Length: 283
Image 1 (tube, helix red, strand yellow):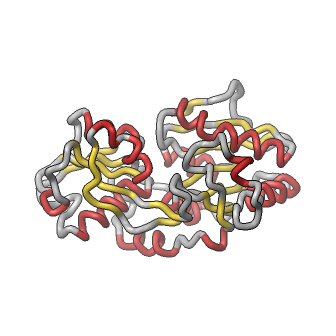
Image 2 (cartoon, one colour; image 1 turned 45 degrees about the vertical axis):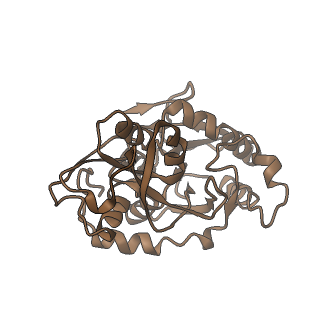
């Protein structure tokens, strides 16, 4: 399902003065818009273009839209980016964002309501996942349960997809799920609702801005590269002033694309069922 955040409809191909941008639906669209509005304004000024927001409910729609030339720029987690690499050679990572704690990587967590459950206790439970192509979904939850000697699809467990990190977390609070997998930064946000973390994943490389080299004019692509690299706080001491009003997950700036190592995600993906259970196949 397609939701347009701004007032215009998508166009068949990118115009020189328009960049069609899609962020992952990690949370409610209104929250996403507030978090990314500052970044969108910054990129529009830096490239002398208009950013046209195109928001999708489903990660798969973003990946296929990018591949089919309907998107020029996307904000993706590591697993969606690795999947996109498989289907579209035109995807170019511009840089990875530091997470809410300022680290150049992030983790996922298993969360429960009120505690009292250990990962080794997860048998016969209803597990909430974000989306099939979410890093903190099937991939990270499978890894965390495996480390505890448990299985996502055995031990009497069953799972379904909540649609977003916030809905997975709130699903635990509301009693829909016994346990859920979410981005650790989002788990912290709901800790005041008695949501407790019982396991944490290995670190994953940060979320990245990915440019579509097949649709963006070369001069716009070059400006985008420069604009994202200019958000590296190790090179540019002015970054905190630029990003002060942005969402927590992008406020701490970027690291260059060569420091975004997705090889671990790609190796894990090779060990998972394909397509990921519950996912629409991407050709």
